[in-house]
Length: 628
Image 1 (cartoon, rainbow, N blue to C red):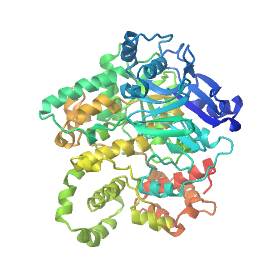
Image 2 (cartoon, helix red, strand yellow):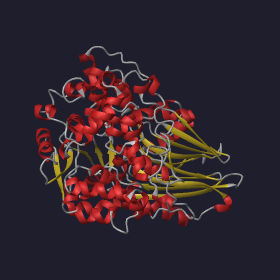
Image 3 (cartoon, rainbow, N blue to C red):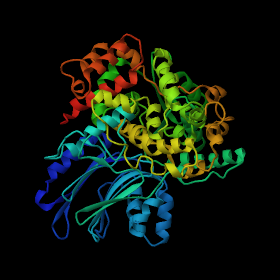
Image 4 (cartoon, rainbow, N blue to C red):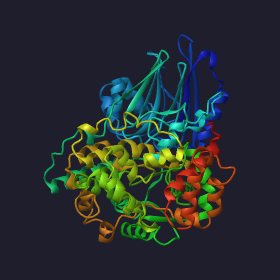
């Protein structure tokens, strides 16, 4: 697990080694163990190649240094991530006649490319972002893993390309424009994140999940090599017990291969069924007690620490707790925005950052953890998935005009404590699938966003639902959306940036491509049927986990930010959003923003998600000094 940075520059604009080192080292938190740098000119001397690398040593600690070059000098690679099936691939490559100098997955990746060229990425089972220079072909190959667990940001201009694991090195590049993408603000208000390939900066894009890109002769071309199977797989598993067995086998393997490590590792344990299932499976394959880490709050109803301790006790883990105080949360806030390269869209990002610092620096420190991230989006765990199964019926029974003129106003007037009911009711009336996805996230509607910004918003990105017409049910369309947008552009981005900010690698067994292919074969009822969703997962864990964990209502990782805004953060909220120094107040309708603040502080409405979005937009603008 590492941080990578580099460029292809026209020779007339080449940079020196000090620039490469300085920009790469902005990501020292991603790789505190080692660093490496490489500068090279193309054979025609028209372009300069620069690779920088910061290493967190986990596999082949002594032999996996990067940038890694082959003995024949043809290939040079910088790589962020892990190839979980590298041992199996290495065996296959040795049989083909390939030779290895190290025991690292990095060298396996190089030799896989030598053997299979761009088709190699289809064989990789892991999380990765890499840049490979092929000197014989004079081309740069960039790739990102299937679900987008590892980031890769790009900036392209006049035949030149910058790339990096984080945005900060790109925007610090000499002469780089920090102009803000005004459309991104609209998408952020609608979604609470910016859908890829866009970012908040006009000049920076994301290489999309499941894509590779090739630069050659001054041109960069991107192609898709992986599509989540919910878009293309017809459910064919009819027997529920067969589904359980298929899941158990695939999940067990997904956990087992993610435990491959030459450094200490553990697990993040929330006490919910997802992380508990991961820990229970890890224990099966570990000869030593598993180290577990949990985070919580003192405020009633916002902590799952007691549930985590139940699981830790049952499986005999070496357990560690962190209780987050408002003052410590505040101390980490601006750094979190800097590491993310965007507003911190979820309040839970910051406790994960804090937990990662503790996990990497405590007396029981680790370098890698397994987490339950992605289980809801794969297995059908959110309440919205169950709601999506009957929304079509609701819209058939309730005419659009009746919903807009009667039900919508009534829902809007519901009191402070009924936020979830309001979201369900508002989503039920939204006929447009893309807009309904936004309602589920708790952002503003298109109309509200346009009123807040005082201008019309640009259209939905054309590739947001590229397969929606081919997907058989509303549930599967929603799952596919979450797997291709909500996950990579928000939750997985959070997982990478916040864990790596604390120098911790996070591995996510539920985000396994083989497991995803298995689950896509299950009919809708196997996913959302029964109480609480994730029916197959609950059945598989029924005799392994305590019933109180299996049956309890989903809480989610919630931060008491609404209470803190009305308490210790009250004046901070006012300073960020309604003071004369507020940049956000100049970007949006100030009167509407003041209304949101007043209604929340007076406890008339719960605007914590919207206020969180605006406050973090302000923090982001100040941290990056962006130009509007």
